[in-house]
Image 1 (cartoon, rainbow, N blue to C red):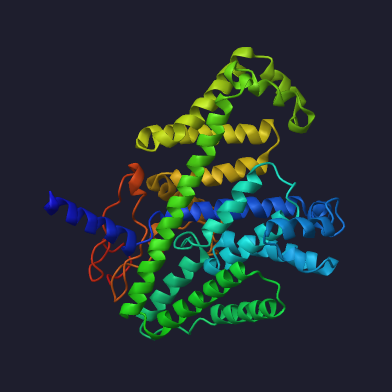
Image 2: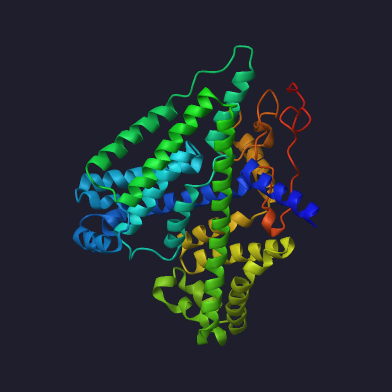
Length: 437
């Protein structure tokens, strides 16, 4: 018995520490939530003053009193000037766009979290439920390595690896990263000196800033040292723990919603879906709402189907096929909610959360399809930050560890793509026209 348990435990520990699991799932979650928040900010740009401005219905003084009581984090309480509000809003838009593209994802995930928390905690009564999901996921993304694939960071790493193997030697050192790190350190020092941050957030931001500097320094000075291996292992453990939390959060959202629905009489008799279809606030297409609500059997099936899907979803994760079928059903349901009830950002947030359970094979196929579409739309070598083909990665070898990310999500029965070979072995046969490492 012991002879079987020990190797299995060692294998499990190795999987958690050797690689960041679910890189495609984490990337699509990053893209989904960054796009959701960015689209929301752009759509509400003409109404930003009423929502979060210093002269909005929920005034700055009321927000300050509430923040004093609940100790929520928001940089909008640092000043009630119009210029400060516009600066914070613009930085929130910029950080969302850069996180979407995957540029400096470690830094942009922190700035994205600051933008989300600052605006949402400024006016807590603004939102449709999807804001709560974005609020939580913006915190979880900080602890993930969400830029491994489908990002500008990945492309920069690939080009740096190719340049290092080129006859001319390594390329010029990266300068934008250290400059960005230094500028943010100066801003953090000024905020600390002005006493703007609570003790808890002060520790969090300084630790994140110091760890980022240490990561860059060790990677530059001793990229193959044991200390760098240790840092990689710690980052992988933190990433995998955050990924597990994201998955658990999605399950909790559905399970709690389903069990609360069961207790409602309108959900028990199958009429709950009928009532929001006749509310002006949730009827952007009155004719469509009347058409759907006029079919009693359809209303009954949708009502009961929603409850069953939400309650059953956490249990279907034990079976890959059942999970994939129910996941597709729930995503389609969110699309219907976005159109029929006029809740696009709530639906986008939920679809982004659901994406963490998508199969790796499907996400790879989506990436290859997007790469082909990009090639047809942008001939002549012009490239955007869209999911690229797998050939964009450098072959394993030439003193470089094979890129992590071939693993699927093992706890819930996903198919495994197989173990990566040793660093000195090519990860896959050389492609036509490309030399072997």
